[in-house]
Amino acid sequence: MASSQGINKVVTYKKEVTWGTKPSSTGGQALRRVTGSFQLEKDTYASNEILTTQQVRDMRHGTRRSSGALSGELSGAAYADFIAAAVRKDFAAGGTTGSSTGLASTATAVTRASGSFVTDGFKVGDVVNITGFVAAGNNGLFLVKTVAALTLTVAPLAGQTRVIESAGASVTVAVKGKKTYVPTSGHTDDSFTFEEWYADTSISRTFLGEQVDTMSLALQPNSLATIDFGFMGKDAEEATASQYFTSPTAITGNGIYSAPDGFLFINGVSNGVVTGLNINLANNIAQEAVIGSNSIGAKSRGKVSVTIDGSAIFEDTTVLNYFDAETEISITYVLMSADNTNAFSIHMPRVKVGSVSTDDGEKVVILSFSGAALEYTGATTGVEATTIQIQDTTLV
Image 1: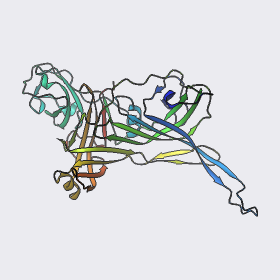
Image 2: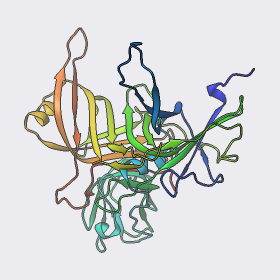
Image 3: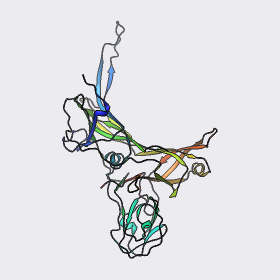
Image 4: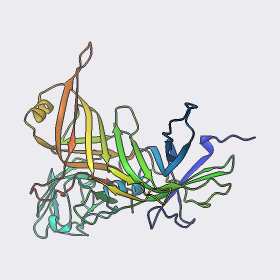
């Protein structure tokens, strides 16, 4: 008899229209994964009767639910649906100037004499693609550091050297790909059906009403960037011998991002001493059991909470002082593709360091820190009123 092997398992998902209701079998998406495992869970309860036999007479199964854990290596577009579900907003296009002959370049910015970068929709933390300048160093991918009506301050992400160039060429500045963030209103409430298809044993397991409860991004030296999701679901169907999502869309072919191939900015300044950074998001989902049904009857979500922890070479008092003075900072990390043509960016406009500690030994002293990202409530032009903003330049 054949045995099920993980290398032959196909994990497929599709967004649901109604929570816990299986969507149609067409249009499923095969998942990239390091591991992906979904389970049926049940509450159990036992008899409390006191018997002369001094034994337990009965135990029953109670409310059914499902859960899932997905671990992956971060690549463009592969996990966009789950990232959007985690922050409760679909990915959407960002700002653009359109083609314009009124844009000029300085060593640090794109400028204009009329119009407005603010009105065009640019935000701090955006990765923009600039095309059309005569000087090659003025084109390519850049991170937006500040936004004003007539000035867009940018940092090069592909080794460019910006030079002064007057207006006249037909230039376009546009947010590349799409971005999402925790919004202040209009929050989405996405759920998914997942299927595990074991081709070598012809076993299909289907899990319903799965929602993203947690999301974690890990950025470490000499390591591929990783992303993990935890799911909470409504129920699971009985295993069958037939694949449900019979013709899933193949996994994406984009390259995997490497944590060292990126740029870290703290308060808009490039930082080269941080040795690791983890970003953790929780949706704080709660589920409610009901009588008269053997599956979850209702669910709710709490606040979106985002925490960070990281480490840095201990060479000055900067992080210590952030902690001591309860200073609010911004953190931006931009991961670059191997050919510098695409990026994945994470921007947290308001972060507070909650703890710091240093280690010891015959080595470089490392400072560890942790903290929380918070909703931005300031008045700086071009800063989104959000906890976390994520951009994937491969999305179209």
